[in-house]
View 1 (tube, rainbow, N blue to C red):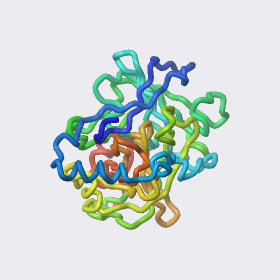
View 2: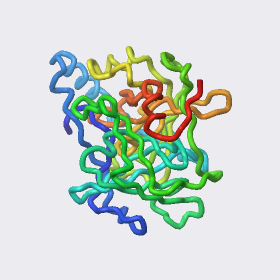
View 3: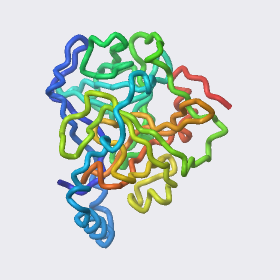
View 4: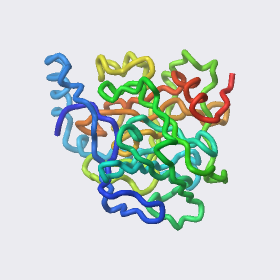
Length: 308
């Protein structure tokens, strides 16, 4: 397996249809630059030594299994994003509900080659279209808004909004997430317990993405601490979640939300961007686009109203 940083994107083999999806052909795969080629040899040697020294029992433990299966309705802002590719494939990502018309996700989930797709709301099991609370709404290429500074070669400004073709109706299982306040800009949130949720892979040993929604809780790190694992990669517009106990995001979770609880409200601090390609359960941080760095852009590319 290549030792590289990757975006957490899952590619499928069949073009999506809103009425029928061949989920058996959805396979988490990765596509992102080889950061490690640019690392000093002594750092690369250190990282490889650390990983090889881990017990086999640790290297094989499943990452999201160290977390939990979400209760029905626990994360009403979570969506599954399925994107049709011009090449004939399809991608599985996560995302969050911004409003009845818009969702927030990672740029690498819907960038070049995406010609439209499907947003799945309110799902307990993303593969079960007959769930009474599940809603599926299409989106078109014209509804995608990538950050203008999105750089796939460096995984920077990895954020996008997507407008669906018709507004979703809110319910107990489908609700918008709360964005940080403008006054939160400059707050690093380090030390707070963050929650990341998604339908991505839940084990390095299992190639398939999870059919049910899962989540983990871990401390938010300072960017300085995160940079020790990703030197030269983590930027001010990123926020990191500790990988302690092998917990964090994995392939297929891209675009999903990193949240905290504040005064009884769920606040989204990040959008899943990238992690360690060598494995999802090796105690490396998960890295996110920091929403406080993009509040004005999100408001300009959706219909949400920012709080002071």
